[in-house]
Length: 385
Image 1 (cartoon, one colour):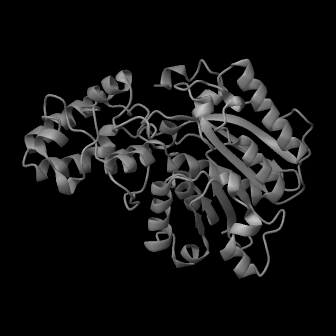
Image 2 (cartoon, one colour):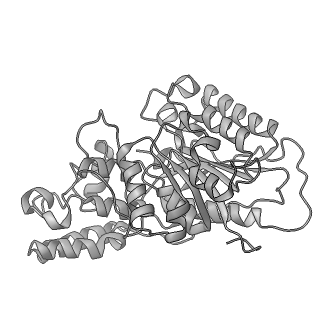
Image 3 (tube, helix red, strand yellow):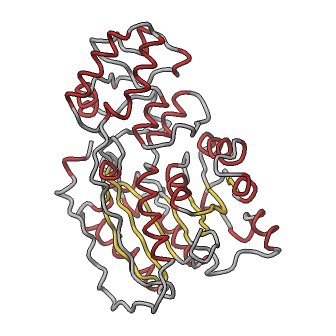
């Protein structure tokens, strides 16, 4: 709730399985709509928000889950619940936050890095929605590769900022936030852009790191003990705990891959080696705890260590334990691996909420004063997998 007692509203595009949505909800935003093209991810949103009502009956009634291509999303037409409640379409400036984790392949280190030349680039669609809705604030999330100092990437970042400025926004810059700095037991640098409309701008402060490192050993201890106990091999659990505790660190970046990728695993060779040092077999994903197969899912125990279940991968991403995923195992894992960690989204969401609730005179910012991005590519290369 805002200082005036009113909920801050949000629409999220490319919502995936809800990582950003969970974080923004925890930060105090009430979702009008979540737009997602993947049928499994959209079903996950429907399951948790509408059916299980994890965010309460009110938001379950008012949040529109739209399983569609964001290029086809038309707010005046598709926000049926909002239109029915308000007896009119949404008006410009009425929405508090438009957010989205637009697809990363155009800027991914692992991809062809075509940028705006890639037909999967949805930044133009996002900017069209900004122009149509004129939200009070904008939040865009993408992979760290977007801040790589390629001429075409830096030029494109500047074009995005200039377009936002032309629409009346103060661009607070791109920031590279490391998930591990916000309590996520994983190295996952993400590029975040925040912009606030000049009519609402009274300053903005990026969130500070928590200062506490949550290790894989601490994050997975309870679930690992439970799994080994079900397999009647607590001796293997003790060996896993010793190895993971001695490593004393977070995991490498989880990758969700694509539908063309094949089965689920924990990433390329470098990532698998890092997981092995934490006592985890990265060659695949285990079945759920209710379907334990000792040889397959626990990776022959002390030799390779256990594979992660989808539930454990979700813990590594920072999802709450009560958030369930729809689809078969591989589809579930891809949703988890492609997600934006909820704790990071919550930290940025709280910073945006605080900025929108500030009182006093508006702050006039000369053009260019907020150019500083606060990041260097060299500073994050070691975190990338």
